[in-house]
Image (cartoon, rainbow, N blue to C red):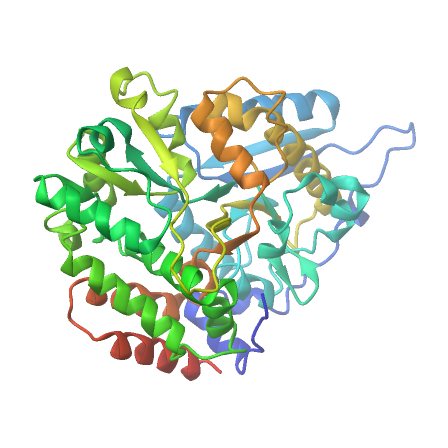
Length: 441
């Protein structure tokens, strides 16, 4: 992704509270970790902050602890000191401690727009040396790039997701509808379900990013992967007719009563409940929900057996490719630029990435950023089918709100909700995006 030059670094850092990061006096790393005269290495402690608590992310947490135990066993001079926070607490603390240059030696970050101010504040260390040491080839193509700025890679992805349209096979069969291959077919399916008194699509658009997925797919199928990406990276404009057309089709779907009643006031969790209680036929969501549709034994088996998925339909006359997906890398590991144990921290990150890739799919249902050989894992067919689609993807367009800066993303998400609510025209929707992006040029 093309990155914009920042006209005022101080302004950006101030907006995230990371102003004091520049000018750190603690820039040395491996110099402080000298070997002892007897050849043993000096004891070091690596501070590691992550966002998978045992209570809410038990499987993730267990794998993390397992990897840490293994690493400490292999490196007796290293102690990993953990701090574990919930997602929102983590984001808030990362912002606060960055302002005092107190980042942990290793932590988690999101790619693209989230990452950029921390990189521009010289808070994250480049990790290209460990990538060039054989690790780069282990990643799915296109995932590491989400963490690149100006040719350097500042974090390594732990997660990778795409967003299929999941559907209830029993509802489709009961209403005699087939998986749609084109947008026109899709509208016909929606109309048939509505006529039969069935809610077509579960959508919780109070969270807004959920509606963004629908808009992104329509933009991709109409204009190809270039249309939306070029508008965001400023090699194009958001007032592009293809992006206006995508917004128009969102409102066409609304006019066909495609979405569950009250969708703009429902959370994603509430919408998911509608789908999982057989109250809606379809649900567009990231592959992170695959465990709920396959291995989660707290979910009724008869529901799990009825869940299928399909690729977002093509739009007749559009430039999109049905093998192009919306999705991208999730959280990744960074190493703090001012870490006193930078070399050990990089070694730990390299080890963690490889071990996480071995365990995360089967043990936690998380698709890693590294490649998964589907012949070597024991997973339900639905999981394997999605992994195969991921391996054969022609393109993965990173979630729009992740690509954008925080302020532009807020405009995007607010306008998504307005678009679905028919509070703005497609033209007003795209003009608001163009203005927000232009203001940052």
